[in-house]
Amino acid sequence: MAFYSPDPAMAQILADLVRALELEGRNGLAQQLSITWLRYPLSVLGVGGDAQTTAGRGASWGGDRQRYPASVVKLVYLIAAEAWLQQGLIEEGPELRRALRLMIGDSSNDATGLIVDLLSGTTSGPALPAELMAGWIEQRQLVNGWLAALGWPELQGVNACQKTWGDGPFGREREFYGPELENRNRLSTEATARLLQAVIMGTLLSPPACLRMQAVLARSLDPDQRAADPENQVDGFLAEGLPVEARLWSKAGWMSQARHDAAYIEAEGHDPMVLVVFSEGERCAGDTRLLPEIARHLFDACRTAPAPSQVGPPR
Image (cartoon, rainbow, N blue to C red; front, top):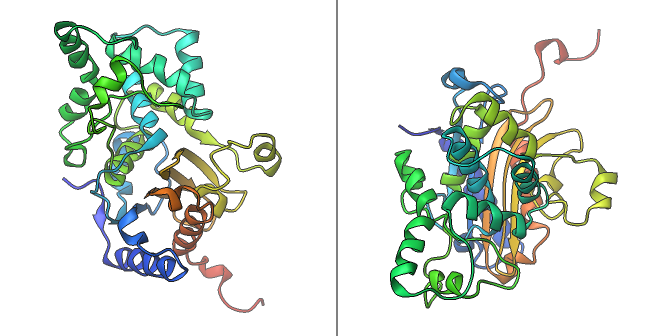
């Protein structure tokens, strides 16, 4: 069953937006861009079992195309860590919580490495003999196996088994990537949107687990806090296109060939929305205006009509 109701009007808004962005001088953007956009009549934060009463409608542009997700894959590892805890596969503790907080809040690659090690029971290091490497690879597929077991069509072909790097993988990690990097992580905006929606609604794992995930995904739009943290995952990303009073839960990803973001947004006078945008290529990676412009346009499209008492001239 689809996780949202397709909306032709929203699809037309997306198509018009992509064309307009291309006309601004971003030639070829339509092939470099994936967008999944959902809107809801009411807040879906923590609705849990009542999710069907607040079902979203939405649209995608290239939403099923799998791309390298950069640090957006850390959302997958956050969810998997809570799932492993729920099953008793890893132990709770302050160091785990510190790593999860830094992995999402600061997008720390070092913290992500620890989480991937915990999820898979593997460690990085020099090349291994073939028989040992085969077992290591099997372990590193545990998150992919868990995702496949969810049975969601959006997750078919997803690959979430690699750590994230500054200078790139070495040793057994580089071998695991494949000669042409064919085993890199892969996600689509549709898959990301469904996972984020499940976290926000609180439908994938226990309510306490979802509350913990929501807490680490929450971000401030306060200008002073943003100025104090140049890598705030707000400026240059979707949230820059929002008013400061909006409420935001998000995870961005950025590297030399990608600029991505996944966000759930609530604001007075607007329908709540999930917005996931992946943009590929060196030009997109360096375009700090692209994601804010997309968010601003789609946020405005979610404006709700004023209440009847506000319509018409004052009496």
